[in-house]
Length: 402
Image (cartoon, rainbow, N blue to C red; front, side, top):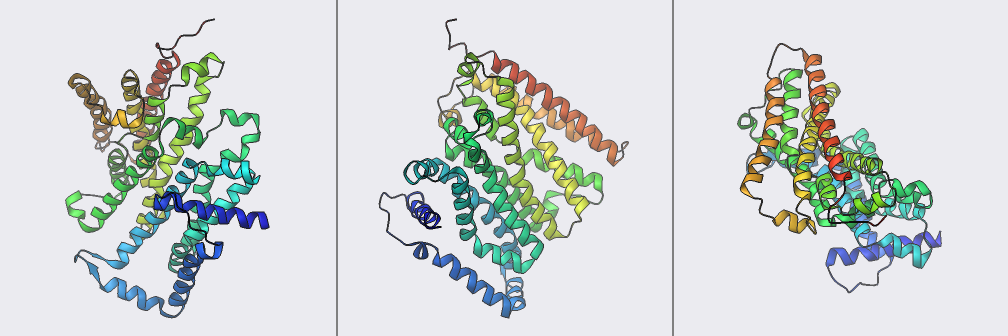
């Protein structure tokens, strides 16, 4: 217990470095580091116990810029802060190699470290969890599970580092050795930012968006269109596969590149889909949509994600030819005009074909769903296999003597 106490104290002390951007760390006890979170939580519990309806009424009656009530704004910001806060915390814990330091100097195991980080994250978001629990108990339980899930995505693979199969499993540390933490954070949060912009405009300017969700087929169409906007930017998979220079070496030592790439891509797919989907779930639940409608919308967004990912498989082949050193160099690169035109065609044609045949009213809802699944599966699987065949051939700049 004493070891756990000192470990979590050190973890809170380490936060000073990546939040204050300073080499000076103040010597604080665990109570000094955490009292503000506990005090905020207790204060909110006291307020909601005695004046919950008054607070809701006050927030509902006042508007920001005359277009959105503070109550609606809080409903949007609370899940956003919860998601982005946990992601930001976990990325910097990994980036600063806190686990390695604590394992070497304090003999903290992977499982102990995961427990410490999970408790730290719960303390940090405890005021937000109080707000959610008082609004809806089921959403509060879901929020706690979300904190657990986000923690698991980043750390559960690291718990199994003692097992031989870990060498072939997904590792966030390996991802950060290929793509810098800031680029990973940007690639993960841009779809979330697009999602929140979409939700804000849906609330404030629904006529401008021209959204028609009068039936389930239109819900699917709206989800597909929205998803192609959310995921049109370069994703984590794009950066990971474009910048990775280890494939020829892994191939030379006998690693099955097909399995190696497949495991990492699907882990990154899960992360990329999950975060915007959770935001949309909260939003659609707030608007009063039923479980079936929400599931259909999230299904359509997921299909759009795989369509965009399939298109990016071709872009990976194009960009790997330039052998970029890092993400900053890749983003700053000025693409030749002929390549740029090719990219526009690659991005435009599959998306337009998908959106156009969804306007055909000959198919029922299930026929439309099946058609989308078949079309997008063909696009994704064929382009994924094509990309993989090109990558497995290896880098011509690397030669091995046999």
